[in-house]
Length: 176
Length: 208
Image 1: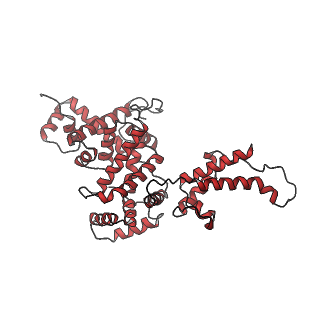
Image 2: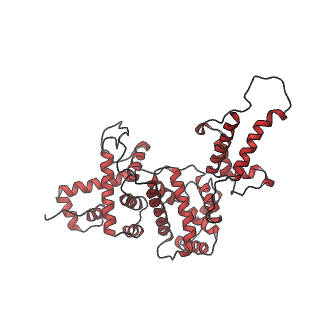
Image 3: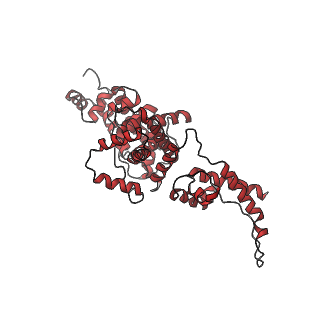
């Protein structure tokens, strides 16, 4: 035996497509047989590791985002900036003036006029916003005449999170 | 390309329609794809939507194998499709659309990794090792996760070659074309990738 089988040749043996001489060598050479067995085990390991399935609605969401992006002029940034600031301002205003414009009702246990949003991973509002995104059709530019519903429905997950962050930041400001 | 649409139809009207249409469609799938590509070249976004539908699973999974998490895989899959749309007027049809699309996705993944810096070449040493042994089969998700992690940390070319050949069943020639390499190099890289994967999984903490 003058030399061992090369890696490309061993791979061919592994895939079942190599000439008989290489197969004979591997059968007679413990070193090459061990290398081949190692690669075969690696292949078997690799095949056993499936990619986790994403959430069922993910595929439709992916296509929707791709569609929006290819329909947008190049360079368009989809992070919503102006509407977020408007919404944040509106939310802050609602928090600050809300109690004064509501009729006074019977005394009740003291509750804070405003409470901080929970941490992101415990925020039950996020799935709601994400659900709106999943069910809401294409993202449309902010349009006051259509109200907030269609706008929220069109937010991407990223934009939904940005909105929550903006509201949370606004809330922190009013708490001080 | 394996099994697009499986499981989507009940949840996705477009997938359901497309699934039915295809099951009744006697035309060759490649011919249909060529028609869709031609329509895309004329600016037909609905046709591109159909192409995305056909390839979304494969592209997502390809990206996932590279980055080993959903968020980055999602970003990369989006990026690949958007780049494909923009580049499709220049698609000459020398290769199949799927091979061309894979190349775009692979480049997106490689650029992503380059921008993020090289991944560690070593598996973390803190992975739990609750059981001893050297079984070759992955039997549970915990172990599958470690395999994915090990794959995602293989050297760049080895990882790309393994993903494209083992998981997406591209030929050595297609992989070589995609990576700008030779068939011999692709085979050598794949062999080393498999051996490295096996070694890393056999290391303490690398495999249950």
